[in-house]
Image (cartoon, rainbow, N blue to C red):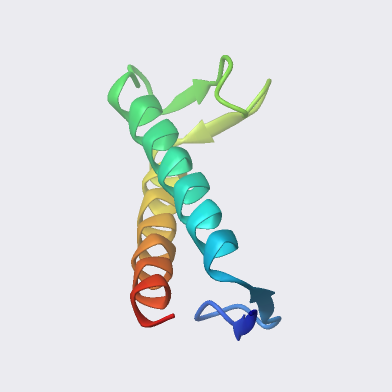
Amino acid sequence: MTKSFKFEGETLPFRADLETLKIKLNETKRLINNYQEIVSVLDSDAYMARGNGFCETIYSEDFLEERIVDLTLKAEQLEKWIRDF
C-alpha cells in the first residue's frame, strides 16, 4: 500500500510505501553523516570534496551546516511517517 507524502517547503508530493520510506530515511541519514564528516574536517571556509558525492565542488561551512539542518528535519519527518504508517 502506498500513501502520499510531502515535505514542508516542497511543492510536489510523492507516493511511497513503508519500505520506500525506510530506504529514504537511511539515505537521508547517510547524507547527514557525510555532511557532518566534511564539516568536522574543515580547516578553511571552503572544502573541496573527495569521494563524498560532491566531486570537484567547493561548499562553504554555512552551506554544509544548512544542509545538515534541512536533512535532519527531513529525517525527523520520515521517522514520524514511518511510525504513523
